[in-house]
Length: 337
Length: 290
Image 1 (cartoon, rainbow over the protein chains, first blue to last red):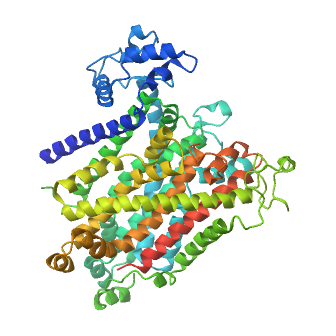
Image 2: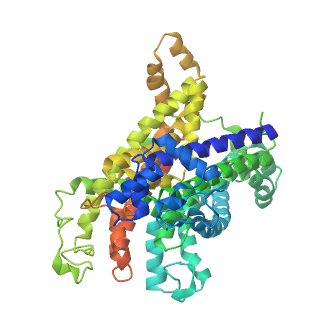
Image 3: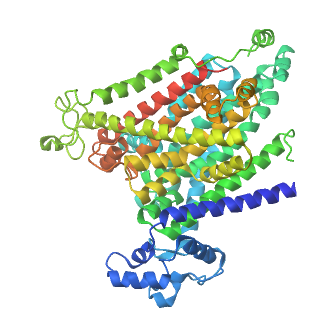
């Protein structure tokens, strides 16, 4: 077990290193943009060249990646915070510490000052959506998996397929038209302050609804497949043939076994939700992590983008590991060699 | 499930695997609805130049004060006075050519790497699988946003982004199928009579994977249509004047409280097309179930 965990942890770190290198390679393939982004559009070309020289931003890609990594683990100070650059970029934590994601050229702030609040906001949004997705998809999935091809199954399946066909921006448009414009009972923006006259809890309703609409149908379909598989097993047949009531059969025999496989799917939805929050946060002006990724990549804010993708990949690999561990706990037949 | 179902399950023999037959799909009502939705947009896209439509890019200045649906503009006009119906139908041309093209390229790449990984195994498999894991650890939309923001929005780049984002998933499915198939006797027979590896992959393995892969491709087309719509909505869509549904929503979402039809109509169009592909995929899966 300890061996398995160590191996998985090593794999996770390798995955995160490769992922961060890929993002670095795509964004920094053409060097030198850091200087221009830091100085702003009104700096002269000479100033830009001078700063590029000081930051050694023309070094080969692997060298620059190595330097970024060095800053991150605290081995070397962040070159952007060097007083010699004259940029006046200062991090209250100092220029050299473990977990230094560098300086955001978009926000002109240390990345660590920007990113964690945003991540917290998104965690709340995604967490609320997840709390609704889990029970909804279990109810839909189990009910339609009870009798494959029955009327209930067909109806619920069509409902699920329809909902998974509504991307976040479309359902955002539909819901805002209904509940903000035609029948104004909810706010159309969610800036998480009450300046607009709406209490903060109301501001969560539409963004959460948008996320749930797009995602729950997919999970329900997974649970349905798993439930169908369980319903064909001999022990269910035995339970029915000995006259057990449907309710008792579902609750005590089928449900627990049908939830093993979708457990992983449910955990992987956390990764899927991060995709979803990018659009949702843009639609509702929600100050979250997804919008930060979008803004950073549109502006070319390398430091923020690297930090944000590293965190998303970390979330993905950690949930994958949790999924595997949970799978082992739930299903004693699975043993790791 | 009632008692007689359980008894029937014991007494009926296991169903044999069926070859994917296109006619069987028509037995499923959901598949027919899906097919009708998809064909509606395909026809609209094909007939766009012949249909008596106003130009999708010219502004009707007079309509700008009253952009609501009228006799001249059946679905109204957008904020620049351009005909919404014409933009919708010409937009269908864009989305229905870019999405299937991207998925086709992604399928070719994905199936190739999946075949190689599954058939050869060993270090090749380990290398491909680990690399796929890395790509799959990214949220899909983040891949698209990072790539398109850096290499710029164009049809070619959307094809590249779709391939990067989807090929690992397709590869994983193909690999799983090949792992199950390569131990079959007919593969051993093909090897024994000296067929080349390429022949075994293309003639023996690929046709046996096709039903699942076709269903997957159909789902992926729907998903890619959504992604192209999202990219348009994020301002990373195809450059104007190409009408693009996501871009239409983006342009008009700021005036949603005044003229909601400008955003509602393209959103609704996108949902119907995606729903068509998803229902079709579901119908195929039901019809071809072993």
